[in-house]
Length: 456
View 1 (spheres, rainbow, N blue to C red):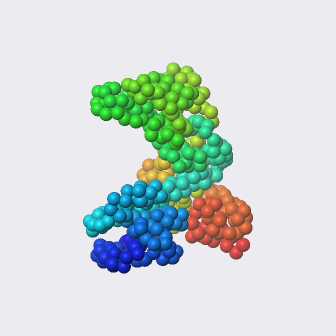
View 2 (cartoon, helix red, strand yellow):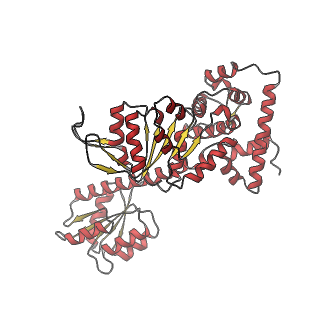
View 3 (cartoon, one colour):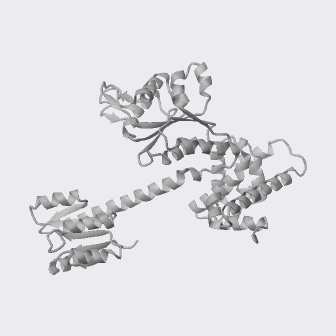
C-alpha cells in the first residue's frame, strides 16, 4: 500500500523542516507549503490525504485555506494548528469542517495520534462511499436477471412503485428473490440514502421479535438489563423489510397495523409514544388469504400491506430465464473466486434446464458457485454439478429420442434472437449490448461467433 501523502502548511520554515523530518520518519510522504496560496497550488495536482496547517498565517489564514479545501476537495482531511488557548479559532475550525485541531507548542505524540486517527477516519469514509456505490449497483433494478414475460411484468410494477411511499407485499416461494426485490425497491427509492433493515419474522420467538421490532425499556422483562431501541426507531427515514410476514403472531400484527395506520408505537414496558418514519415492504411464502380463512392472519392488516402486490414466479415457471441466470452466475463467481471460467458445456446446461429447481434461483446460484469452485477447466461440466441437479434431471419423465437436441436447438434460437435484438437496439455497439445483456465482451464475442453474426 502506498504511504499516505501529507501536505504541511506553515509560514515558519523551522516548523516545516521539523514536521517533515518527524512525518517522514513515520513513513509518510510529505510535501511543504509556506502559505495558503502555495498550498492550494500544490493541491491542484491532487493526491493528498491530509493537510496539516497552521491557522495564523499572513495573507490566507488556515481557516480560509480550510474553506477552500472543503469546497474543492471535500475528501481531504484537514488538521489545523492553533496557538495555545485560542479556543475561538479551534471552535471555528471544527465548524468549518476540520477533522481536528492541535495547540502549540506541538507534541510529537499528539501529532502522530492525530494523523493516525484522521487517516483511519478517511479510510472508513472512502470504504463507506465505495460500499454504497457497490450496493447501488448490486441492487438497482437493472441488475435483476429475467426476460420471461412474468418477470417483465414484475419489473414494470417495481419501476412504478419504487419512487413512491406505498407499502409493498411480495409473495412467492422461498428462493425466488423476494429479498433482492425489496433491496431493489429501496435502492431505487427516495429513501435509498437511509437504512434498509431486514427482519425475518419467523426466526425469533414472539417476545424477542417484539423487542427487536419495537424496542424495550430497562426491566420490562427478565433479562432486560438496559433499554434498547427497536428497529422501527433505528430505521427512521429508511425502509423495513419484514420477511415471512405470514408467521407474525396475531398480537404483534395488531402493533404492526397501528404503525401502518397511525405511524406510532411504544417500546415494550413503556407508555411513551414514538413516531415511526418508515416504509414497509413485506414478504410472505404462504397464501395470506388462506391464512386469513384459517384465523392466523388479520384481514385488516392484509389490506394495509396489500397496497401494491408483487408475485415472483418460481424458476420452473420461467425456464427461459435459466440460461441467462447461468451465464450471470458464472461471470459473477468467476470474479469472486478468481477463476477463469468461460462458460458451461452443452450437456451440463441441458441438465440444468431439465431440473425442477425446488429451491428456485437461490438453488441455481449455489449450484453454479459450487461448480465454479470445483472446476479445473475453462468450462463447467456435468462432473462439477451437484448430484441433486443431475438426479433431479434424470428423475424427470424420460424425453423422446432427440428431445435434448431439440431443447438445445430451441435455446440457441432464443439466445440468437435476444442477441440480435440487443445489437439492433444498440446500433451494433458491443459495449452497450454487453451492459444490456449483463455479460462480458468475451461471452458476447463467443456467442456471436457461435451464431455466425460476427460479420454483421
